Image 1 (cartoon, rainbow, N blue to C red):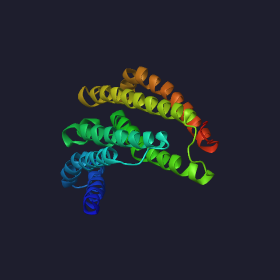
Image 2: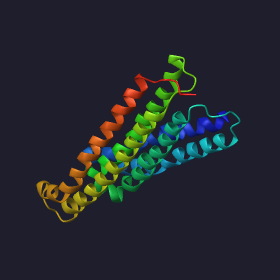
Image 3: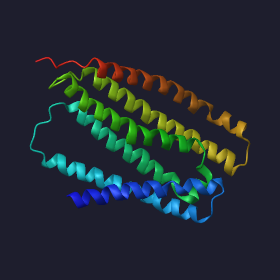
Length: 222
């Protein structure tokens, strides 16, 4: 088991570090970075998938009762968003033949939002919801507000990612296929960016609810 975890972590680190090479070519680095970055970026979903399968195996074989379900909901959300944002979204536009058109567009923004939310934000919130009850001496906490915060943030972020992606596809086509100017492309993107703006307010509401819940965590009613 320990060796398997080392393999997963090694793949995670090396594919992630070398995978950033697909950015280097566009800032004037040698051409081989296009291949290095493209190949390793395409491999990035592999360690994520292995981790998800490993987690599912442990959950299936667990023998202890889950005391605070929201903490585990955050852990599952972290895995799913990481897989979608960093794995699927990253793979879809990181291949050099596609990245040639999408690099620096709102497609990159879509990938970045979903990946960062899954790989970092939800991971930290999972840790907070695990640690805060222990720091406050609460064995089972009331997760009512926490659920509202979690689902509001997750739904809003998924919609933001989708609408950023639509805007980015339009931008890539208008600017890099049709050869129109940057400001011309903005007119095609205005509707989708406007929707993203309102989704951002919904996400902020979920975030504030989550922060307030963490600082005022209370025991569950028995």
